[in-house]
Length: 184
Image 1 (cartoon, rainbow, N blue to C red):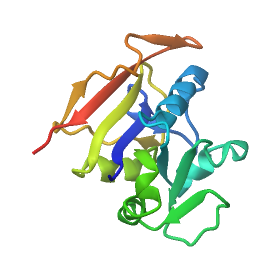
Image 2 (image 1 turned 120 degrees about the vertical axis):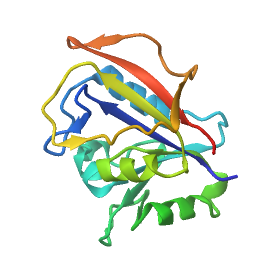
Image 3 (image 1 turned 180 degrees about the horizontal axis):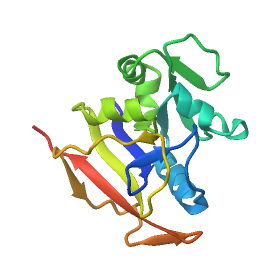
Image 4 (image 1 turned 90 degrees about the vertical axis):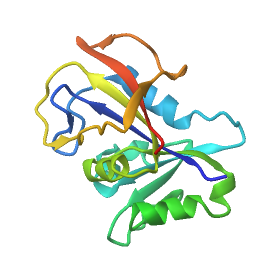
């Protein structure tokens, strides 16, 4: 069975997701939510994959790379050796193809797209994306990278694994939203 493709992102009120190759905010509880969601499986014998662009990979502190407990897939036009446990592909199509072949097709439950902006855009415009998990940071931040517009083909849904209501950390309020793509 092929893995589900989801997207997860934190976005400011001005749709910003990054500045100078980093997050514009420091929210430890939100990062813990990201980690929990991208590791969570319904089948204990499986794990998830995280798919990211090269710049997103480089924005992760070196001590945290690769992201533990998940298969890390980095998309890059260059041939890179990012070490053991990291798969490098030159396109999303190639990465998804590897997840649909043995041995990964029997090991991976969800493939999470975790950035950057051009990868989010590609996934959001495709019919492949099942759900988007968006953390709305309720404050404007100076950013140089932005999330593309959410298309009307995505509708809000509830997920019992996602906290409801407004969260607050370091004086910054945020809330979690989940959107599911309507099937054509």
